[in-house]
Length: 603
View 1 (cartoon, rainbow, N blue to C red):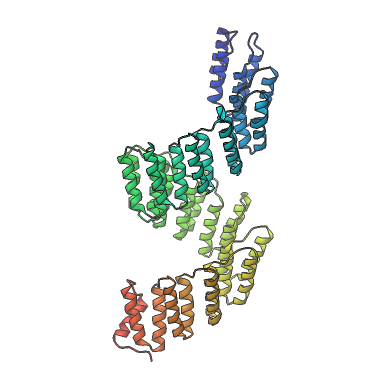
View 2: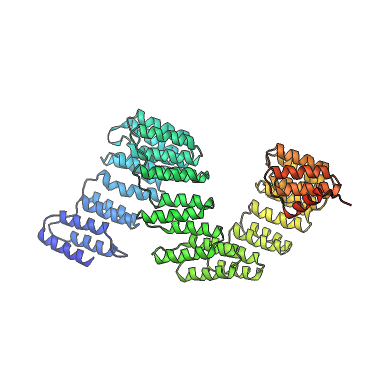
C-alpha cells in the first residue's frame, strides 16, 4: 500500500492540474485491496486530494469512492459521498447509481431501490437504463416478488429505448421462475423473448433445462436441447453437468457415463463439478471402484480434486465399511493442500460410529477442533447416536451438555436421538418427559419423534397410550406415516388385538396411505400366531393385488403358520412358489423344506 501511495504522490507532482491519474490510482487501490482494512489509506488519499490546490474531485472520483464504500459495507457513507457529489453541482449518470442499487437490494431494501429507479433518477434527469432496471428486477425476484419483477420487465418492453430488456434481463426472471418451480410461466417468458426480438442464449436454455430436470421432465429437457442446437447454441459444460446430475438422481449411471464420454468427444472439457456429480451418483449406486477410477481420470486431465471430490469418495468408502481407506483418503487430501470441512469430518465420524468405533470418532472430533474447525449440530447428533447405540447414556448426556456450552442449540434430530436412546433402555417415562420438554421449549416434534415414542410404548406393552399420542400428533398437524401405522399395528398384534390391527390397516388404506411389505408381514405374523391361517393367506393375495411383492419374511411366516396347522401340501406349494420367484430361503425355511420333502408332519 505504501508504494502505491508514493506512486500517487509522484503522479500528482507530474500532473498538478489533472484529476485523471489520481482517479486511475484510486480505482486501482479500490480494486486491489491488499490490507485487511484499506479504509484509512484510501480515505487519507481522498482527503489529500481535496486539500491539493488546483485539483477537484470529479464525478468519477465520487463514483470510485461510492463503489469502495459499498464493497466495504459502508452504505450510509456511500450515500454521503453521493450527496457530496450533488452538492458540488456534478452531474450523475446511471453508473453512479448501480452500486447503490445493488447494495440496497442485497440488504432487502427493495422499496428504497425502487424509489430511486422509478422516481429519483428520472427527477435528476438521469433516465434509468437496462442495467438499472435489471438490478431492481433481480432484487425483486430475490426477495420473493417475482410477479412484480415480471411487471417491471413488461414495463421495460413497453417503454423501449435504453431501458428495453436484453437477454440478461429475461434470463434473470426465467431463472427465478424455474427456481420457484413455475415452469409454465418460465416457458411463456421464453416464447415472449422471441416476439420481443430478443434471442435466447445458452444461459436461457441451460436455466430451462435445469428447471425441467428438477421437475423430473427429462424427456422434455432432451427435446429442448435439440431446439437449442437448432438455434445455433451448442450444449456447454453447464448443460452436460445438469443432465449428468439428473441421470445420476434417476440411478441411470450408465447413461450418465455415456454422456460424459459424449461431452469429451465433442470437445467439451468436463470440470471438477461434472466429475463430482458423476462420482456421487456412482457412490450412491455402490460402484465405488468406478468412482475411484473417475478420480484418476480427473487427475490425468490436469484437474485438481476439491473438498467435494474427496468428501464424496469418503462417503462412498464409509458406506462400504472401508473406514481405514476413508481415513487414508483424508490424510491424502490434507497432504495435497485441500482443507477438509465440517461435512468431511461428519461423514468420517458417522462411518466410525456406524462401525462401532465411537472412541475413534471422538478422537476425530478432537482432531477436528485442534485444526480450528467448529463441530456443528450434525457432528454432535452423530456422536450421540453412536454413544446411545453402545449404551453409553451418561457419555451421550455429557456430549449434549458440551454441545449446549458451545452455543449450539439442540435440534429435533438431537431430541430424537436422545429419545431413541431412552426408549431402547426402556426409560419410557423419561422419553415422554422429553417430548413435553421439547414442546414447552418451542421445539417442534416431527413424525420421527412420535414414531420413536410409539415404538417404545408398544415394546413396553403400553398400547393404550399410543392412541393418545396419535391424537396429539394429528392435532399438531402431523400426518402419521406408514412407519407410524406399522409400529402401532405390531403393538396391537403382540397384545393379541388382531381385529384392531386389521381395522388399522383398512383405515390406513382408506386415507390414501400405502402399506409396505413390512406392514403386511407384521399383520400376517399376528394372524399366524393366533392360528388364523386362512386370513393370513387372504392377506397374502390382498398384498399381491395391491402391488406389494412378498419377501423371504412373508413366505417364511406363512410357511411356518401352515406347518403348525398341519397344512403340509399348501406349505410345499408356497415353498416352490417362493423359490420360483428367485427368493433364497433362510436356514429356518430350508429346514422346513427338508422336513417337508421327507414327508414330515407336525405332531
